[in-house]
Image 1 (cartoon, one colour):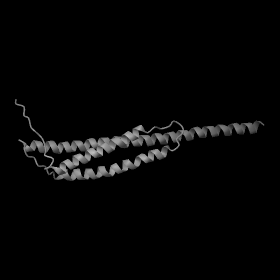
Image 2: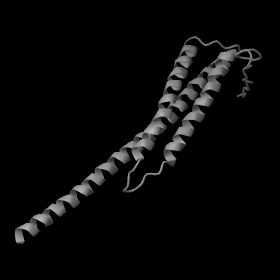
Image 3: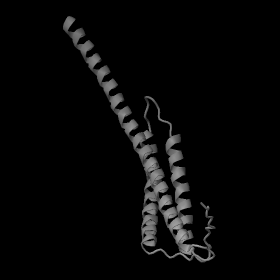
Length: 159
């Protein structure tokens, strides 16, 4: 059985739309990674939650902007995949090249979605942790106030 080798290379000048999608995706991936790193570096205090809600909300604005850019890119990618315009010169079998480059674009789209979903999941975890901490602080304060009320009532009753 003979092994076949194919040279798969697209000319950047002849396939501007394809490379525009690839380059735009690279920028989007960097933005998503930057936001995810900011989310993961956010330190949450154990008990004193002063200004924490503001810090969490501040992380949402860039996430929202990236979501808009991602939706725009997905629309462009879907349009391109519906009617791909690839110039496949200097290839012995252009069908193999066509399948490779369209599949590659689909794989890139899936990887970007996974990274975006991970970033959104990390953001939601931080929000949930903050809400749980607020509920815990409220429960502790309620217990102290109840105990103080009980002690005051016992003091007044036994006086």
